[in-house]
Length: 437
Image (cartoon, rainbow, N blue to C red; front, side):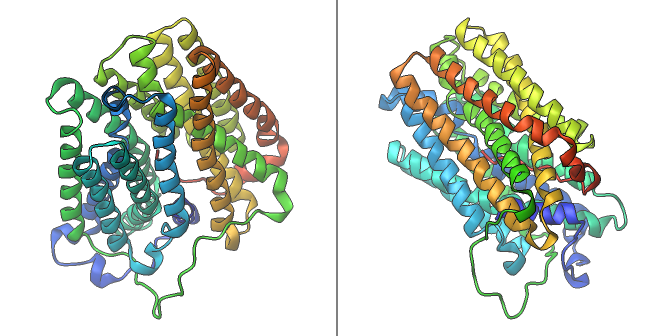
């Protein structure tokens, strides 16, 4: 699975099985220092392309006359694509090579753009979202491992901080920038359901061309291992703590799902803020705050990081709920920033906790189970919120959504911040992962 492999590379300090012939190629573009930024760019634009539709949902709704429930179904299709790809293809770069898998992921993302442009109806939107999710599942670990290995080759012996920050900026920052770019283009340029995808396709094409010149950092095994999906396992001696980390990840991802699915529609209908640029900005604020919090506070002790993160997540949810009831644009944006920062910190802590309790040989499988919980959280609560809006008012639906998330946080917070989680503080410090929404 993509994120599990990412964690293994960043957390274990591995730099892959490099070859002097490829990393030390003659072209300056094949030097690891230059290739480091090439891969970071390709990573960022692939993640950004996956959030281009977020500010455009209101336009699709107005054109095709569907409501919030169908928006959550479309979003669920994306999450299903990510989850399936994580388990079926996220670990294949170990066998096929980083560059090849990164190129395939960028190509799949471009295929999603073709679906959006060539089939501009509801079925095309759903299929395009599934394909975009597949590309995100493929590139998350591949690109993060690639960046880590290129950093190690370019700066041998140096701490991996630069690689970690770059991965965070490309991953979570890319998600926010995609929505912001799409919103700006939809607001201020012609063809709001065409131009954002065309611009995204151009950025992806540039990334693919640049990747061709990047060196490979992994020597694929010979003979190639027999294919199998990523396994899932639970650490036998720490099941309660493991399940707490999984529930926390589900709550954190649910917050991200809220802002990339239903928030733009709420801005347009309840707040009468029909600016597509504002819808993109709201999504950008959430992901930008998550990335900034991870980069700025990620070196805190894990228990403290989880405590601060879950506290900020709850406080932000309270503000978001108040914003829906008042309604208030300022409260929505402030609450989004606060809850986004909290989700980013707490998610990093959840990853560190799982890594600290899982045996090294089963770390990938343990993280696979946690990410399964996270992507259930990304999909099911938001889908439930969409159904609830068909039965009760939006205010009551959001209040129920927030109450469930706060209850989950209260359930897991004590266990994740208790003394029994000391192993996470003493263990390795995790790389910064993201939902890839």
